[in-house]
Length: 244
Image 1 (cartoon, one colour):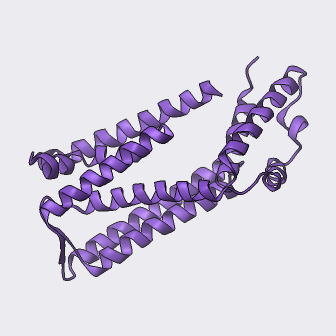
Image 2 (cartoon, helix red, strand yellow):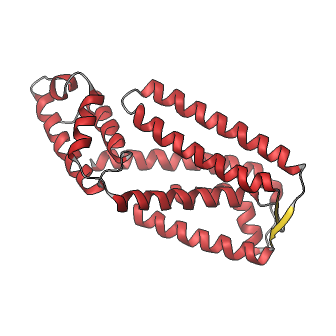
Image 3 (spheres, one colour):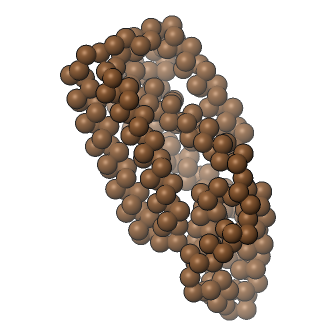
């Protein structure tokens, strides 16, 4: 017997809450497997999620959180992956088919904006893990504010004095190193998410690595990259559910 939709949603929300609480990935996986079995047996007897785990999913998650150990290595690993993805997005997005120039406002403002965005996403994901509607609204608001801030910084920054930071050869080396690191991480954690910055910025990657100029296709490439990103994430999510 498979779990009900309510059961699957509860397990996914619980897993997300515990992961974003910095708990040991191994312990979380073991606990989730036990919770799934407990849930399946309970639903066979006609019980609901509330009958099995209590009226408050948040309180249940908090009680489980206290029992699991905090994993510093997992936090550092997640931090490294986030920083790597963040660095790739910022660096590739700011390239303009030539030397890398930016103002002080852009150099400081954009990384800070991304860092604040990531912190907010983590906090809201944990806070509204069991409230899908509030979680979606909060994510949309955070992403909208992030977009507005980036556009404002970009528009203002372009009017300020620009400083040459990297030449084309240095940019090529940085792209190669970032791409290699993202591919290794992608294989290690079995996700394509880390290479999305390179997919949506493929015209720039081709220009700096192979001197192929298709800058006129940048917008179509961006749209196609975003579509591919959502398809890949959907497929990965489905595969994870099937494995569970």
